[in-house]
Image 1 (cartoon, rainbow, N blue to C red):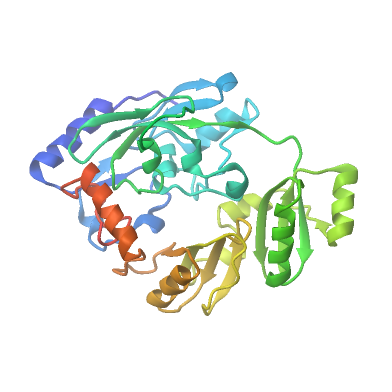
Image 2 (cartoon, rainbow, N blue to C red):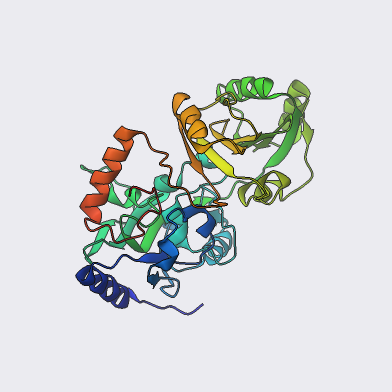
Amino acid sequence: MADNDLTQDLVAEVSAAVQQRQPLQIKGGNSKHFYIHQDPHSDDLPTLDVSRHIGIVDYEPSELYITARCGTPLKLIEETLAAHNQMLAFEPPAFADSATIGGTVACGLAGPRRPYAGACRDAMLGADIINGLGQHLSFGGQVMKNVAGYDVSRAMCGALGTLGVILQVSLKVMPMPQQETTVRIECDLSTALHTLISLSQTSIPVSASYFEADSLYLRLELSGAELASFQAAHGAEVVAQNDFWIHVKEHQNSFFSREQALWRCSLPIASAALNINGTLACEWNAGLHWYKSNDDSAKIIAAANQAGGHARLFNYPKPTSQSAMAPAIMALHKRIKHAFDPHRLLNPGQLDPEL
């Protein structure tokens, strides 16, 4: 793939928008538009296309980092790393071949390995951005350091482009595991929660968990006698489907069909089911609940808040004006937004209708 540095062009476009006080919709591979689209008027905004700003700027397998421009396809990043038996440990979902590394960071989503290997923000080493004043800013570097002050590059993870246009990122990479096996344990949610809590207190190397329809699936870095011992102790059977976790990560199994509103509830580890009508699936040691529900959004948000977490509508059958943030969290977000984008020009309404 051709190397294409559009830094100066993108800075000029944002600077012109700042002069005109013209809000912009940032567009990359468009693979997660279903997730970020909240403001019903955002599709009418001028588009800042960053998908052609591409190229792997630096990759040092021995130093365990990679630096790439925002429009670089996530698929290319993963293929490049796999050639050296390495990976992005947070297993980001793509949802389409058009997914870019910039959009991956902006959405901040992580896959099944997240509780065990960290989130997107934990892999962030540095970033170049354009803020809402048209300024080109650089934060962090290419190594993990203990520094004073806030690690600004990590603030870009999950901000959905509302704090700045991501130009390039540096990410920590990790070696691929040598051996992984998926097993299934037939049980109800209560038993699954007990099993997950028990496993967290042992040295058994679990790298993913998923519960749905009275089945707990675990990905274990075990084989041979150790695996056989685990199966005997927990009544587990080996799942032969090699791409099971890809289907979970990419929402390709039947649970994630988009016939109903899908809610993503981030909760404390091993949380019981919320008082929500609908169908439930759990990941991340039951710290991530997925609900297919037609309940009122206010009810779902309140249930998640009461459990010590928060809820977000993951796909949008229709735009919503309902804020999912508690007042104190919203006040903090507004102050951060004002610091980076005081004129509210970058992806307005994408993270929350009030931002």
